[in-house]
Amino acid sequence: MMDLPEDKKIILFDGVCNLCNDAVLKVIKYDTKNTFLFTALQSEKGKEIINQLGIDVSKIDSIILYEPGVSYEVKSTAALKIMNDFGGIWSLSQLFLILPEGFRNYVYDYIAKNRYKWFGKKETCMIPTPELNAKFLD
Image (tube, rainbow, N blue to C red):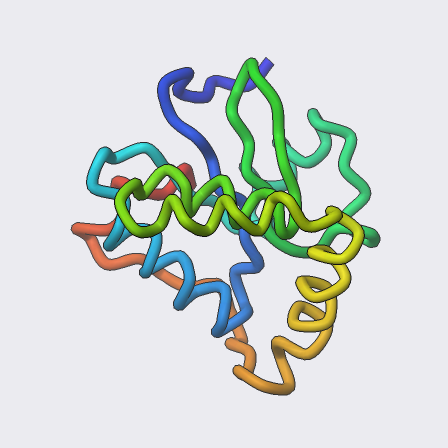
C-alpha cells in the first residue's frame, strides 16, 4: 500500500500537455481549502497509483481524480467534481452531471484527443516552483 495522505484528493494529469498544466495552475489558484495534491501520469508516483487502481492508461490518458481509500473518477466526471470543490459559482458546473456520462466523455475525449494540436506539448513534465512544490506528490 502506498503512503498517501488520507485527507487529500489527488489529481493525476498529463504532465507534458500545456492545457493540462494550465488547468493544474487554475486548480491550485481556486483550491482555497487546500484539498488537492497533484502528480503527473508519467511520474513514478503517478504510475504507482495507476497500477494500484488497475487503470489502463491506453484507454484513459487524461485526468484522474483519486480519493485515497474512497474512490476515483475519470474524464468529465473528475473535472466536474474538482470544480465542485471550489464552491461558489463553480458549483453550477454540477448541472452538467445530469447529461449522460457517455455524452460528456465524448466531448471531453474530443478535446483531449486534440489537446496537443490546439494547445501544444512540452518536452518534459512541468517543474513546479518551490512555493508550488508542496502541492505535488513527487
